[in-house]
Image (cartoon, rainbow, N blue to C red):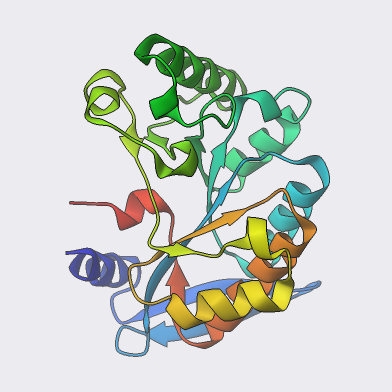
Length: 222
């Protein structure tokens, strides 16, 4: 279903060709992929931010490449970084909820989990004017109770970069390239410099292979 939606999206954007606008420094260039040439669709996702230096550098790199990503923000990291959140919104990235702290939601009471998610959504809405629709539960821990009580759509992942553990650009890149394919949601974090380096290299390498980057709302259409 994801592939059918992706191909439909591709055709809707440009009947015969998908033209991806990209930039290299101050020089812009256009790369066109036909529907047949596009290898597939992937989503880059980032948890635990915003982080002043690393998130800013990541946004710069994504902007240069014309790539949209999905950011799942931790509520306690938002104060003082409002301008970065505003920039995510203005540059077309998806902004989701990652809880207020990083405690697994399933280890909190239902009330505590809901309050943390609500506070994080409130902070995001105050900055962007829009309440988030998606949640990335810390550690991927979700439950039927949360499903019934939280009005957010959970988003997990299919490729784990393990960037938080590896902390090495080359190892992160190799791991993701080995596992990534059409329809994959790639889990990364925008709070480590090595992760940012790896993410931007992956953006280049996967683009060269013919992949098109989408946000998770585009990937998760039923």
